[in-house]
Length: 231
Image (tube, rainbow, N blue to C red; front, side, top):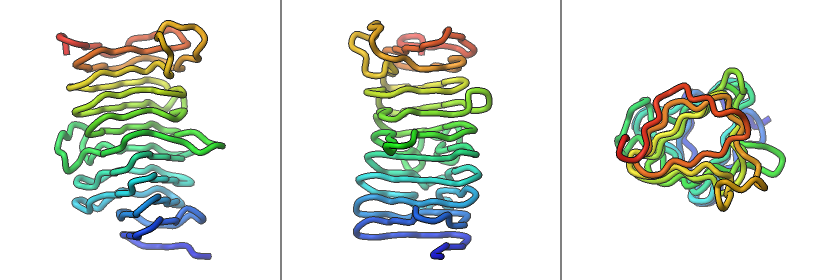
């Protein structure tokens, strides 16, 4: 049936890595591809182990787990133009191995979040991404609205939302050297013709530049909001 069972899987290819057709069973995953890197697991896995170099694929990285979560070890970043994730019963924790790491070797280098035609960028139990540079949300980013939160961090760049929405319980963002604009591409941000994000609450916000947010529901602030000179 082509299922790979292993403690650690390292997959490298000059072309594409296509391991998304069946659900494999590995504990740790790393590797590289010249184009797209696609992998599906049965019950969750770690991008690692520590110091593995993570996953690098210039076109797209597609990660799935039928159950369970995807976590990340130190020194194991994802480096890609587009990341697509499907976790119907787990959490996505791409925090570089630590909730507070600022090390270049740990931080992800993801240009954008994306989705397939029939899906969304989803992790039922929560989404955490610590990124090095700019991060663009070009996907419907979804968690369970009762159990899952979205936490996004860009260490040296901006977080933008050229298209699509965030649907989550609580949204927290940080950009200590940039701005955050979550407007679903609305120009100007106050236009009523563009659908807005669906957030149960806004948690911690720490943004050096401007912070712009469109929300469809009541805006419930549950964390400290520090923007501009206050950040």
